[in-house]
Length: 210
Length: 100
Image (cartoon, rainbow over the protein chains, first blue to last red):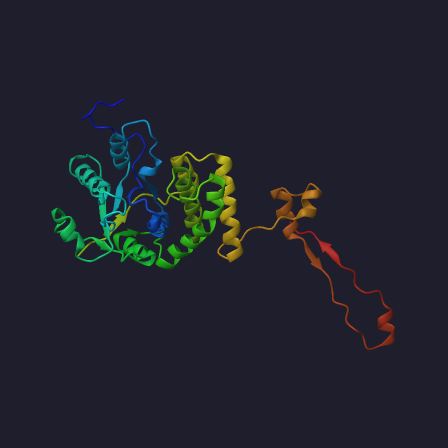
């Protein structure tokens, strides 16, 4: 068990792994799926904090997951207050972005992070420390996520286009009811459902992106 | 102006993805089959159809399949002849030619 303050060295190679920092909100389901599909379209593997089992100190596990990824995508579009009283915004996503930025600065491995937003110029107000960093504006749409991922990443061989990402998305979307039934749940924001959906996206991407 | 990041890592395979997530092989195969069948229906990929007769005869291995593909059936279409004598002749029978 690592002590507080010690740096955890990732065991697996971080190549081609992407840490996804998103809100786990039913309204965000389509965008969640679109990120998974877009990352697989680029031949990479998304990792999310949903995969982290309970029992261990969550912060250590989250930081370990960030360290095990070469890239991280941080969606800061959900800045609204929630409905439940006391009404609060979610600070987890900016906090995890801070961890990723710190890892990029002090870690001895390559780590590239991207910030996504739905509304232009809002990040300058909500997180002014990032001034000088241009966020990718997806406008809260699936198409926007595909477009911005295509702008952020380039692959020399097997470069996916937006149409191919849509095909993967539709394919995975069609498999969700069967996966949910098998996992005995109604939410995609669960570890097992995420793994199976992500694997399905990987199979589809391998066949569609040539 | 943002510059896109060039991905240097190789395109991941479903096997590697399953290993990363710890998905059991059996479940991974089920999911793979489900997705591939759906893609085949939509025409994105072509799947080989199973020959039930051949499998029943025990000839479903790769060697026999490749051999079977080389079989050419040489058959001449029965042409309606003009003369009455010609029609009495035996029609050309279909003959399978095995080429190797």
